Image 1: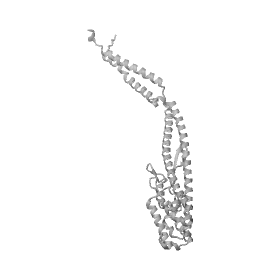
Image 2: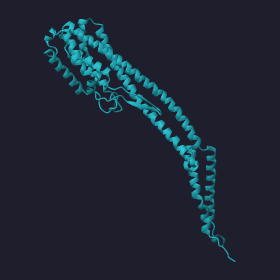
Image 3: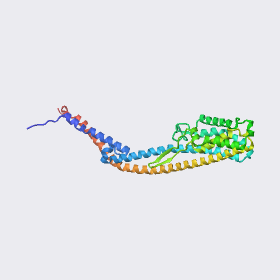
Image 4: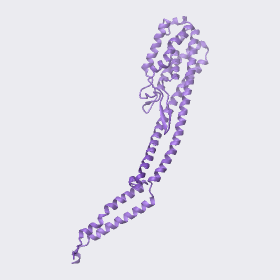
Length: 342
């Protein structure tokens, strides 16, 4: 016959054996109460964890699109403001010229001297370190002062070559209207054609942005667009050719061209604003759809990962009671000693 023995230390350690597990379960239950989802998604969902991760990835993609749409909306708003400023300046000069007799338009046109720097400053508008009219090349100022200076110097050189005198010379009074027309058509206009103006502008194409899971739209204007070239030509012709020195007939040819350029440029800016406005509307609609999609995804994730708060609270209370009982039993066992019974 074999007898067994009872060790005091075994009795002391017995309640502590499961204490670590109880504490781990309690921490997990508290986490589930705080977050509202399973503490260990993989353990709780098993093979369905892939579905949960996929839904969360789609939700993260929607959040990224919403953030990108916020930046894009700011760029569009800034672009619209700059376009409105340029259009207002062009319309103001246009109204001033149209309201004057032909013989006095040249004097009014000289007032456009400040409009070219204003135009280039607007084209170089930046937001968050990005030039809104830079197109794809948004990290570089679209229209550098040196490029405009080179353009004006080239036109001045062409003027001297064609007429035989510098702008503002008294000899301009003898130039004919036909000569002015030829100069504008042959020397000035080609410098503002698509290819030539693209050489002045450092912009590169228009920006397109992905605004939803399946939608991409144009979300910016580029400084190499022709409306800007038209306005730049109008301002340079108004100020750099010394129009007041020419005969009334030659002045009429030049100012009529300026009026036409201002009208074309302003109309082009209106079209660009309309295009950007449509893009803004599309972004607003896309954000609404993204919000709805995110709500559905969040609901689906919740169905998979959400815990029952009442059940989790019951589990916390039960585990807390078990841990307290373990501590109490351990304390009582530590007080057992044969010395107390001798």
